[in-house]
Length: 112
Length: 106
Image (cartoon, rainbow over all chains, first blue to last red; front, top):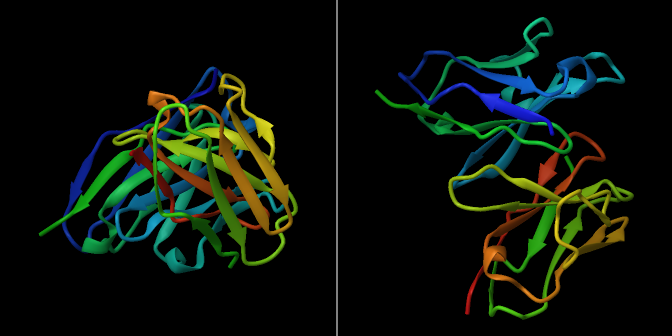
């Protein structure tokens, strides 16, 4: 069974960046399309972007364009999501997910 | 963007009840619809994919139906472990989620 294991909780100041990792076990990252979703009480589940296999590139939700970068290290079977220029509204639980499996979530708190 | 609208937002039920949750898409998504279950502090778990396909390991009391813009999740004979929040998710174009339906104890 595929497991997605994410990095631990982060506390960041406004304006900083955060990079969350997601490591795949019992499968290889190249066989999966990885997406990122965040969850807040106010906005619910929000798709942030992911790898589009048809276009063979990462695509991002418009509201995050310009401050989000997704990357993958296939040698480590690990995907990364970096969000820049953090603000308090970015406080959320961030998930990596495939069509069938979800990581356990990473709480990112943005506070001065 | 494709909008997903779920109803109801909250549903009060008892063990043994039959429960139905509906989800409507703002435009046709064919059968690119999944249902997820989430318990407090946990990640969402896939229950149903492509509108009506039961994910491996999910009890058969869960079923999904619909296509185009109207979809339904049914739980037959609700069990204690089924009290949770349920989300629909479209993957026709990017991903969008419904706002969730909390199934609570009546």
